[in-house]
Amino acid sequence: MRGGFTATAFALLLLCVPTAGADYQFTPALQMRDVASSSLTDVTRAGDTLVAVGERGLIVRSFDDGNSWEQSPSPVSVTLTAVQFAGAEHGWAVGHAGTILHTADGGATWTLQFDGNEANRQFLAYAERQLERMQALVDELAAAGKEVPADTAYALEDAQFYVEDARAALETGPVDPMLDVLFTSTSEGWAVGAYGMIYQTLDGGSNWHLRADAIDNPDRYHYYSIAADGRAHLYLSGEAGLLYHSHDGGRSWTRNEDVYVGSLFGVAVRDGSVFSFGLRGNIFRSDDRGVTWSAVLNPSQISLYGGAVTEQGRLVMVGASGAVVSIDRQEALTTTIQPSRATLSSAIDTASGEVILVGLDGVEIEERGND
Image (cartoon, rainbow, N blue to C red; front, top):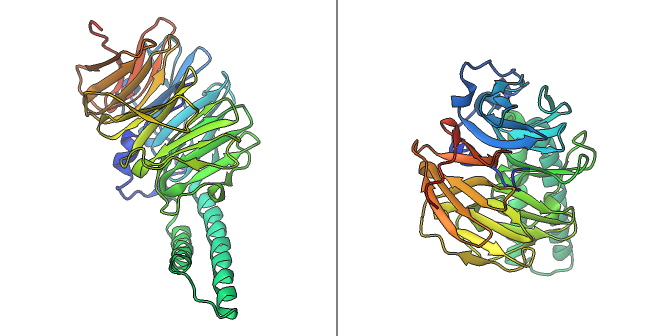
């Protein structure tokens, strides 16, 4: 695993760019000449193999700890934002246009499991149920001669807007990106993304179901990262300081208020502690499974997008301008800047102890310095 958190750098940039998701989603990715120098968003491990994903549906694998890479066929040409494996064979990749891909052979071949068309249909059904519920409540109050509270009236207006928005989305086609994927076993997994998209599968991705009813996010802020400490304890971070924990396997979620007002791009679990990080280098830590959080002093204000927990227990976070911020087991925090100064979005450690970084300039090796 990648330590439980995802790359978001390119997804963040592309959220504001109109994309023809319907045109590109079912178009196989083109073969690229120099895949190691192509823009990559995330990297993970599938047994002894490294697997990375990136722009235009790019999927690449390395069998020699990142020294060389080869491209795998991909059924889509949309940007892929995150990848994760449950074991050496079964893996999932997510991306723009609500894409969810699956492999059963270690990343050699991939199939499309889910897309934004189905995501739009499920959200419309959910929005219509919410509208019916709110309208019934208002009608009940009116029949009883009672005044409709302001918050109830606002909720009804929001429900009406969400139905209209969902119907429009069905017409325009799939565009909203999935931004992270997590599997706690080969059967149970989650995919999260823009505008409050949160989907769960209990059968390895054969069926995905919207779980927006289990979580409080009325403004439909983006979810950026999801992590787990076993199957029961889940953690989710997102836009505008969204930070949640679930202690029942995702059946219900508790939101942590007032931790931070800015975006939290990553969440990671290490030795029973949970870390979340994001905009302007802000890092927060919880030692009670997400119930309470405290700030971690980080002199650098460079935004952090993704990273890894290494086999040695070092938490490595990467971000803008080639920044690499790490916290070792002794809780010492160090910051280095990669010579390329290119934005980095994910990391993974190798069997030799090196840390592979991926980002705008493709694959790099971490420069440790004298820390």
